[in-house]
Amino acid sequence: MLRVDDVPLHVPTVTTTLSGNEAVLVLPALGQIKVLNEVGARVWQLVDGIRSVADIVSVICDEYEVQRESAAADTLSFLTELQGKGLLLLKAGD
Image (tube, rainbow, N blue to C red):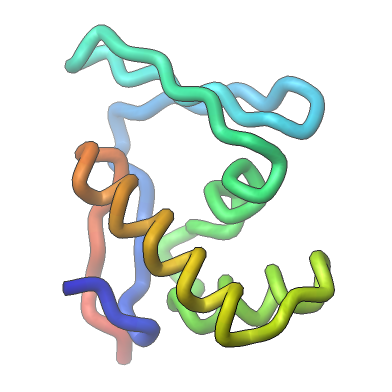
Protein backbone atom coordinates (compact mmCIF):
# COMPACT_ATOMS: atom_id res chain seq x y z
CA MET A 1 0.00 0.00 0.00
CA LEU A 2 1.24 3.48 -0.89
CA ARG A 3 2.35 5.60 2.09
CA VAL A 4 3.21 9.26 2.51
CA ASP A 5 6.88 8.46 3.10
CA ASP A 6 7.18 6.52 -0.17
CA VAL A 7 9.17 8.13 -2.96
CA PRO A 8 7.56 7.63 -6.38
CA LEU A 9 9.44 7.70 -9.67
CA HIS A 10 8.34 7.43 -13.28
CA VAL A 11 8.61 4.17 -15.15
CA PRO A 12 11.44 4.91 -17.61
CA THR A 13 9.49 3.76 -20.67
CA VAL A 14 6.74 6.36 -20.18
CA THR A 15 7.18 9.45 -22.36
CA THR A 16 5.64 12.74 -21.22
CA THR A 17 4.62 15.77 -23.24
CA LEU A 18 3.16 18.91 -21.67
CA SER A 19 0.33 20.55 -23.58
CA GLY A 20 -0.94 23.71 -21.92
CA ASN A 21 -1.89 22.74 -18.38
CA GLU A 22 -2.24 19.06 -19.23
CA ALA A 23 0.26 16.24 -19.55
CA VAL A 24 0.10 13.54 -22.17
CA LEU A 25 1.68 10.26 -21.13
CA VAL A 26 2.64 7.78 -23.84
CA LEU A 27 2.93 4.15 -22.78
CA PRO A 28 4.54 2.39 -25.75
CA ALA A 29 4.61 -1.03 -24.09
CA LEU A 30 0.82 -0.93 -23.70
CA GLY A 31 0.07 1.05 -26.85
CA GLN A 32 -1.81 3.62 -24.76
CA ILE A 33 -1.96 7.35 -24.19
CA LYS A 34 -3.15 8.94 -20.92
CA VAL A 35 -4.07 12.60 -20.53
CA LEU A 36 -3.72 14.21 -17.10
CA ASN A 37 -5.57 17.36 -16.09
CA GLU A 38 -3.79 20.38 -14.60
CA VAL A 39 -3.44 19.06 -11.06
CA GLY A 40 -2.59 15.55 -12.25
CA ALA A 41 0.04 17.02 -14.57
CA ARG A 42 1.52 19.00 -11.68
CA VAL A 43 1.68 15.92 -9.47
CA TRP A 44 3.32 14.03 -12.35
CA GLN A 45 5.92 16.81 -12.71
CA LEU A 46 6.69 16.62 -8.98
CA VAL A 47 7.33 12.87 -9.14
CA ASP A 48 11.11 12.80 -9.49
CA GLY A 49 12.41 9.89 -7.42
CA ILE A 50 13.58 12.36 -4.76
CA ARG A 51 10.39 13.85 -3.32
CA SER A 52 8.24 11.74 -1.04
CA VAL A 53 4.47 11.67 -1.37
CA ALA A 54 4.35 13.98 1.67
CA ASP A 55 6.65 16.45 -0.12
CA ILE A 56 4.40 16.38 -3.18
CA VAL A 57 1.33 16.96 -1.01
CA SER A 58 3.02 19.99 0.58
CA VAL A 59 3.68 21.56 -2.82
CA ILE A 60 0.10 20.88 -3.96
CA CYS A 61 -1.24 22.47 -0.76
CA ASP A 62 0.87 25.59 -1.31
CA GLU A 63 0.17 25.96 -5.02
CA TYR A 64 -3.56 25.15 -5.00
CA GLU A 65 -4.47 26.40 -1.51
CA VAL A 66 -6.22 23.20 -0.48
CA GLN A 67 -6.54 21.55 2.92
CA ARG A 68 -3.73 19.12 3.71
CA GLU A 69 -6.07 16.21 4.49
CA SER A 70 -7.89 16.60 1.20
CA ALA A 71 -4.68 17.03 -0.81
CA ALA A 72 -3.11 14.00 0.89
CA ALA A 73 -6.11 11.76 0.22
CA ASP A 74 -6.42 12.88 -3.41
CA THR A 75 -2.67 12.64 -4.09
CA LEU A 76 -2.38 9.18 -2.52
CA SER A 77 -5.39 7.99 -4.51
CA PHE A 78 -4.03 9.43 -7.77
CA LEU A 79 -0.53 8.03 -7.29
CA THR A 80 -1.97 4.63 -6.33
CA GLU A 81 -3.99 4.69 -9.56
CA LEU A 82 -0.87 5.54 -11.59
CA GLN A 83 1.05 2.78 -9.86
CA GLY A 84 -1.74 0.32 -10.61
CA LYS A 85 -1.59 1.28 -14.31
CA GLY A 86 2.14 0.59 -14.36
CA LEU A 87 3.21 4.24 -14.70
CA LEU A 88 5.04 4.58 -11.37
CA LEU A 89 7.58 2.70 -9.34
CA LEU A 90 8.03 3.27 -5.64
CA LYS A 91 11.03 3.10 -3.40
CA ALA A 92 10.79 3.18 0.37
CA GLY A 93 11.30 6.59 1.96
CA ASP A 94 14.38 7.23 4.03
